[in-house]
Image 1: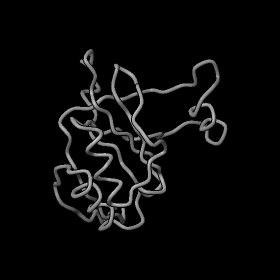
Image 2 (image 1 turned 180 degrees about the vertical axis):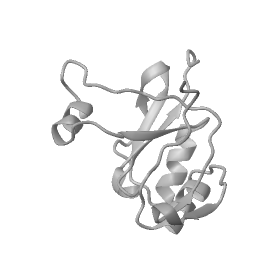
Image 3 (image 1 turned 45 degrees about the horizontal axis):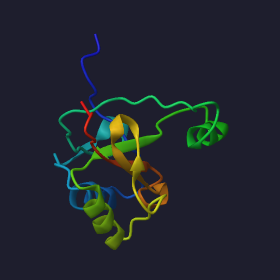
Length: 137
């Protein structure tokens, strides 16, 4: 029986730089690093209390997911972090050199304000910031 989401793994070329991003820039809790000799990997964990799995598919065969699926058969598309002040977080991350796909947040699912950080700012991973709207559960 599946009981919950354990983790989402992201491959990064520079663990120290990526740890700094998630710890300092994104402000997540950090459980430290561990070398796993059997897998020949160094790992770092950032526990997050609750999360959802979002399945995304093109609406009427259009949009950015349609373009993504032209290049890949599917796969991990993005990570999304909640924020209570998306405008302040965008401004802070821009001063740290992060590039965003759009200039301003827009309306997303659940009436949330959302914006995406360009993957080239985050080791090829698309990262979304989302500020809950009034009807978010």
